[in-house]
Amino acid sequence: MATSLTTLTDEARIALDTFAGRASSLFGSPSIRLGVTGLSRAGKTVFISALVHNLIHGGRLPLFEARKSGRISRAFLEEQPDDAVPRFQYEDHIEALVESRIWPDSTRAISELRLTIDFESASGWGRLFSSGRLSVDIVDYPGEWLLDLPLLGKDYAEFCADAFELAALPVRAGLSAEWRKVAETIDANADADEMTARRLAESFTAYLRACKLDERALSTLPPGRFLMPGDLDGSPALTFAPLPRLAAGRARSGSLQAMMERRYEAYKTHVVKPFFREHITRLDRQIVLVDAMQALNAGPGAVADLERALTEILACFRPGKNAFLTDLFSRRIDRILIAATKADHLHHESHDRLQAIVRRLADRAIQRADFSGAAVEVLAMAAVRATREGTVKQGRETLPVIIGTPLKGETIGGETFDGKTETAIFPGDLPDKIDSIFDEGAGAARHEESPIRFVRFRPPKLERDADGLKLSLPHIRLDRALQFLIGDHLA
Ligand SMILES: Nc1nc2c(ncn2[C@@H]2O[C@H](COP(=O)(O)OP(=O)(O)OP(=O)(O)O)[C@@H](O)[C@H]2O)c(=O)[nH]1
Ligand SMILES: [Mg+2]
Image (tube, rainbow, N blue to C red; front, side, top):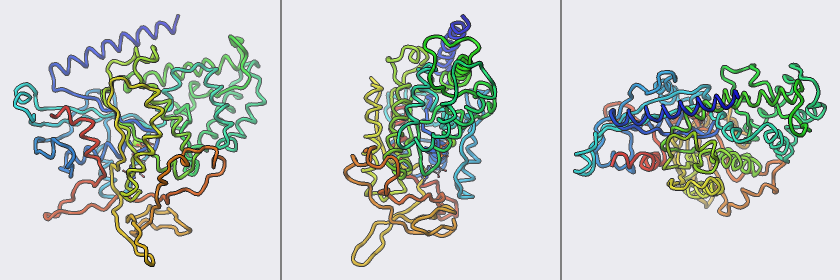
């Protein structure tokens, strides 16, 4: 009874929200909500900062038509529509990137920004009818939270089965051994006990954390709040874990299984669903950022895991398949850009290969999700270009290199960098036969020699123009991304 009541109020609220959204676009300036989607460390915060900076500061955007043809008169930040959501700290992020040349911290909570663009329509017809103003609302959030969306379609028993199946994979077996050992000793039908629940949740969280470390770079790690709890740390809704050998049918009242099941459902109701409802279902356009470089660097097991996470997450954006989710969508996403970020880690000769790899990664997800009616494009890009290109002569050979300042503590072939010295690095080539990258059997347990040499660079030192003003942040194909995501609204 209680659950059906929540559902009812949920839906009533969404209907109201949608009405309010339409009304404001009838009477105010038109607005679109751009979803910046991506797992943790994919580059969401950097992408949003660079996008806004380039629009506000007249960045070089030759492939963004409205800018190229000089039709944008002004781009500026405006008050955001949702009063209860913190503002995206744009100025702080830019200060960090441009002045201190450090990357922003991992995002711990949700935030929002409204960017408004004044433009002149390209056609006389459009000039007559369009207000010449478009507001773009962008939301930033911790990537881990995205991992929770697939849980909405799973009950506790399915969550447990999936968790144990994943944990037994070669790439995870070692990392999960301790948690599984603890879990094996537990009788799901025993009396509920807080200390047991805590011990299991802690051990399960430790396993998820180990999977996330750089050298493993695994992606499918729900529940997301176990890794990024925000203000829910230690609450009952976060103190649960998968149990082995569940009782068939209904769990005995008062048992550990009943307790875990209730908490799992509470997590979905109070944590996942509000996030999904308030932020995901209201999107018009979406960019999905994928850090393929990190997964490639860690080996085929990590690549397969990234593909799994993407497929499950994109399925949640699919209209029409899952009735429960579809009902929640108030709008329809009509364009989706899947973008391989951090392409500045590779020489441009490899950009097409990176794009092909991400296309292949997303392929199954796109097919399974069946985004009927939505245009989907794939792109290799860098929101902030931290390197430039050059060549180095080695004997008779001329090697293409990338030049940048590796972050302090990064290593390559035994050399450790100090965070100050500019260095030329031969990044290696991505293989032209991409099948080997996806062959999980090949090097799953131990990671194989990676085809690329991957180091993180500091954000770039900005050039100054003749007047001594700093130019805007350099990028790779950010303009193409912009054209696809909002270009048609500025036509
Ligand atoms: N070279 C380069 N590095 C990037 C770029 N974008 C992101 N990075 C790197 O990736 C890291 C993560 O980027 P963020 O934008 O913080 O990622 P996020 O998706 O917001 O991550 P969470 O907030 O943890 O979900 C940064 O600290 C940089 O090291 C890029 O365009 N070029
Ligand atoms: Mg972030």
